[in-house]
Image (cartoon, rainbow, N blue to C red):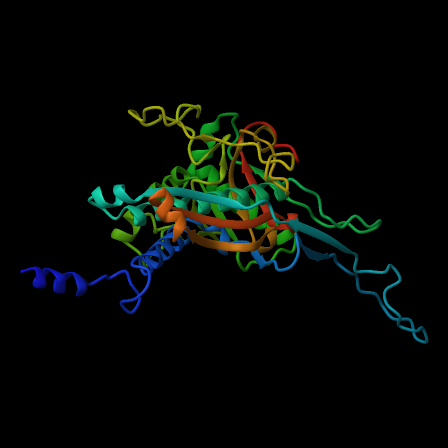
Length: 374
């Protein structure tokens, strides 16, 4: 009997080992890595909507902005040595990487043994969500900032278009932000403004609060926004709206919306809030100016972003994101795991965002006056 027990122990299968040798948990770590990236990619939309560049061997990245030039008639006999006004004027925009953004958790070995679910997988998804949430918030605040800026071209004699701010509705009530009629009108105004400023029609998108998005869906019978090829379940799932005036619509909880992120429960005049929401009234905008710890770009303070912004419409050139370290995973092992009887699971990201071409940004707002530039 003793011999049989010895044989069973020797033949023990360790599914976490690579080729039945080495660390018994080596393969488990790959599950965490995949789950973390899945959580990040499924919850960030800004990464594909703005300009994204990878930074290597430096702290900042330069973007060149070229203004317009003019045509002129040639005078016979004159040399052609460039326009007399020295056009086109050129300006630069530099985006710096913010400090390292991290999200981590310590997983105690005994907790893993006692838990009846995949503890690491669940935690890893939440780490990915946290990084994605911050990524989108910084990107959308950069777009909002750009909508309030003048053109970076300031050469005398050259006038370049800046950002655009469009009022939703005609009252001073925050409830105008949820009016499908007012939103549709604002979309067409935004499309016209982008056309007038010579902004490309390719890559135009809008990001709205989810309640705005669904308000548009409820009014599809009168506003003509339904995709006639997507009926039934597609409409009910919130995928019925494809675009307004050539602008594709997305919904996100991470845009600045009436002074909060995603929702304004209990603080929206003229709108009935859901009941039984407990203490959840939306997350207030945080201060993220250049004076804030870890911030090397300027995303504005809470008061600068303001309490009247209620949606963004922009083209891909509106803002840029510089990534020095893309979403990555690090997990402790070896002696550290033995000493602490657990592992630290860490997701990290080094990035920075700012506006690029203000003319490509449109901010929707409610109230009597537009939010101020910062």
